[in-house]
Length: 293
Image 1 (cartoon, rainbow, N blue to C red):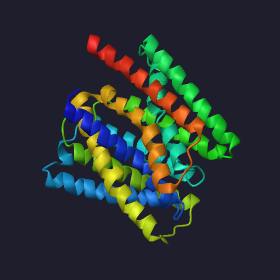
Image 2 (spheres, rainbow, N blue to C red):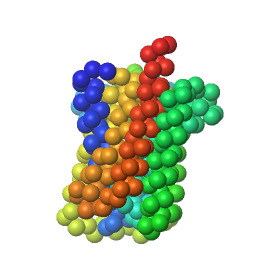
Image 3 (cartoon, rainbow, N blue to C red):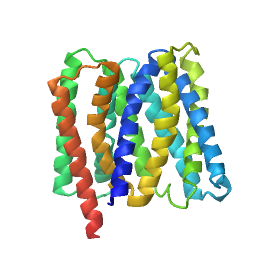
Image 4 (cartoon, rainbow, N blue to C red):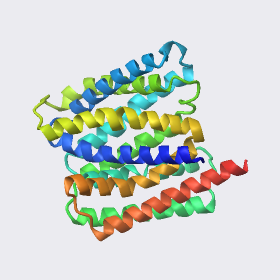
């Protein structure tokens, strides 16, 4: 892994983790599914226009890439982010970021149990540590009055993203990365536009802070972070790139504390540290397996 890849991973981690704070600002003011549909529509259109400006086109997309666009649009955008945005009406951004960070652990567990993927002892220990870290945080948060429905929705969201990650292979191969980014966001936008009116009354009354947070979410986590992720995966592979998810617990709670004033208890710090170590151990075990093959 070269220096450029490390810097890209760090930048991705910061942008990805910051989305939880900006999302919290948005969903406390306007309906979450409507807001997310608008975000994906804007990000998707911008992504496709940028792709055209870069000389990319959807005409050359492979069958596997179209499959990835649909799966990511449904599982990552509509389900993963949709459930998270709804849940963050009731739970704090820092807690949501910690739960979301368990996705690599869920991927490793599902791959081990159902897809015959080997997991070395260090990976098994990492899974155990990840579960222990989550238990530490959840125990304290539930006792502190955190909404159990919101927490459950965040875990379901992480499961949906894990399934998408296991299902989609080679989405970044064959080029046209920005076009893929834009199109999968449009799939998410269309899906949520159909679902949102069934559960929400649309309203666009936002404060200046909410509007700035919305624009930031469209441009930075929406387009920039997704594009950097695809480039990073294409550069070093999905397994090595996923190692950077271990930063999410730290960055998520830190950014939320800085911009939202969310409190950090001892159990949050300890639990986030344990989860991060667990994620890192799981990913190291996978990287070592790839290196030896």
